[in-house]
Length: 306
Image: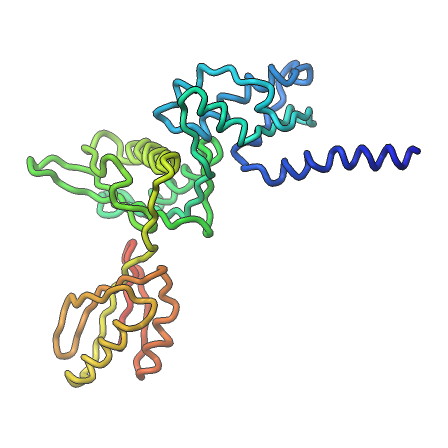
């Protein structure tokens, strides 16, 4: 009888365990231990957890409207006091329906980006500036409901100086990777104050804007690609040069090949690669009796062929 009761208890808990594992991480909230936290009931815990949830799943434009909502018990899939506070799991289906009833959109899936950041051409800015911005992105990821990792959609942000038609100094951001160029409402800001603080504040806004685009349900990702620069130095005949160029252009990983410099002993090409993978280049040129060496110039990979 005791064994049957234990088995029944396990079978009762099993669906909850499975739900907790498969539910989108944005809907899993751990309220850290505070005074009297152990005495919280489901309703009180939900009141504390909802602002965290809305910040993760509601687009910025609707966040103020969502903050006025009190929620309802059916939104909570699991409630469990734990060692250091209270653990809640919200039901994504119920949450979406609840928000829709109030005319509020929900970001349907947790965005996952393979993010890289470059800061180019600013006096005093170096790789540490870009690294600080990457660390900041990881620091806000959980709060804003997105994920960063190598399996995500490629999102590359390049910050560089620019000047408008009136000679005003600007900071320009270029978006590359799987996202359309018009995903941001603005790509320029007037240089204002300390650059690192300005870039951090702007990065926060950019990541929110890209995240919010998921709520539209119409976000069209473009084929991921990246550009590299290839410089070939050899005394090959014109016929050999043309043959090599045509063979390179027909390589399956090459989207486009644009000549930048064409001289007898030196040719330079800008290649757009289909998936950003250039690991094949050394062996490919080796088959033609040439040696390929890779160097990095800020964000652009350069290959020198001899």
